[in-house]
Length: 99
Image (cartoon, rainbow, N blue to C red; front, side):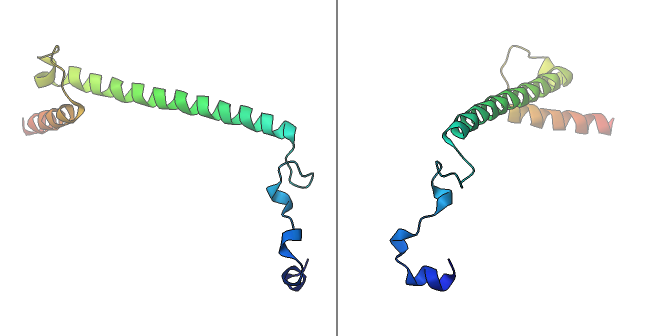
């Protein structure tokens, strides 16, 4: 329909084929929904796994810093926040650079 025909015709009779997932013109079918759900689930699981790996690597990095910095490793049983670990690490590096 041209813009003029669209304006003249009854708008309620004009349907958007892309809004109907069952429409043969939409590119989707009922079977496609199942595949899409499987893809979504796979992406979700992959995302969760990547996030767990990221958090594990961050924890490993902080544990390594905790063990390397002498002021932190002298108190292994005390739980130190990540912010404190970073502050103490920066102080330790500054001290080492001055020596």
